[in-house]
Image 1 (cartoon, helix red, strand yellow):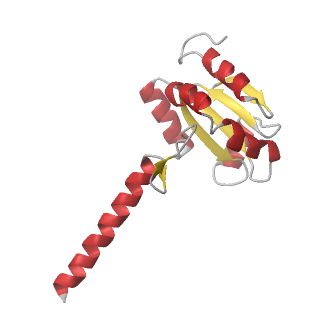
Image 2 (tube, rainbow, N blue to C red):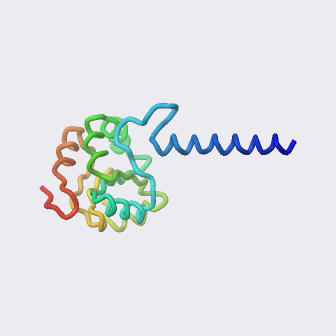
Length: 154
């Protein structure tokens, strides 16, 4: 009986480990997530990661009720051509501005409209702000124009 309980516990641990590994690799139902890969972590951890990787942060400030926010998520962030630029160049994050760390970040970055897309250096300084829905082609152009941390922004 004890061996059966140990086996059950082992199988549970293995199943959880597999589920976590799939989630970390952006997989859902056995398939890799399409589009921009957003990092889920605290703001402090995001800044630390950006500094360690010498990358800028792409920050999608959204709300759950915002129509243009939903369109960005559905029609822009899922595109391969957008993902190619953003997954390579940026630490990508998104925060619901009405929950968790969102309200504090909305206050810190003087949020005025939804959606707002911020390009932020590893020190937390905004280098570019894009307000409202943005077409994929325009977002790619903006993303390509953002330099590495410490470089001039066009």
